[in-house]
Image 1 (cartoon, rainbow, N blue to C red):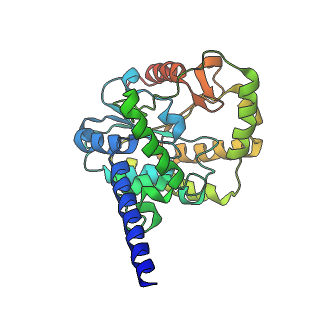
Image 2 (image 1 turned 135 degrees about the vertical axis):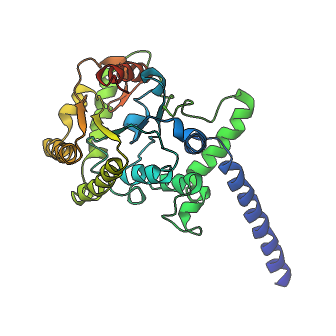
Image 3 (image 1 turned 90 degrees about the vertical axis):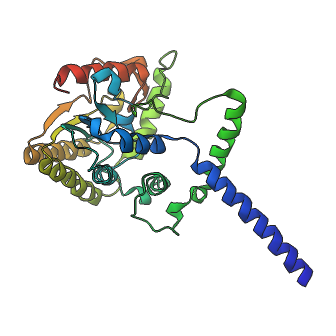
Length: 308
């Protein structure tokens, strides 16, 4: 019995050591969070226009197509709470910031805290790679391995990269999410089916979430006011059939939130949600622009806001 316990303990120790080594390896794989943290730490004082928000701005706004001194710090499922965290984290670096581009759309102001939805694991990345102290060092949010499926996928991708010479980055040097390449052809049936599932996943489940997100939108507004930063609020283009599926109540609340926010903080709002200039291959899926659409959209932003 003692021998069994001894060998069991040795076996468990080996497994723990191997997993610990894998955790360290995964943390050193380049990703959009480490890239943006490092870039902002080094170059934050050069930023005059900062883009925050979720995947809609992450994949839609190309800083190099807009002008100098623009950086995109948005990321997938990044909500107003974490937008505000990033502003405060890099506050001492953003000494020359003039403009902040904020997104308000049919998704981000209706979502619960990241930790309470299917994207909970993204809170891990803010803890590990940005040093967010919302969660303790011994919580599940301080370990990549807490989300084992994605943990193993990262190990697999790292292994594959040795043979394909591919990069682990999914954004360019100025923070734009560059992996949503335009499809070779636009499939209306496929897009329609995706629109149905997307609308269902974005449908508001708890209207109290609006107050939660408004709380942090107001914190962002107060931060900008105290730092003399201009606020530009946008809603990015989405596929027309998908827009028709969105709950009318949800859209009404969205515009009410935008009106309240823009009035309170003297912000400028541009609504591109139903912009007819975006069709077909401009979209990667119903609510995200492709690389072609992002190039077009960024040039429109440059034209609409020449002071950027």
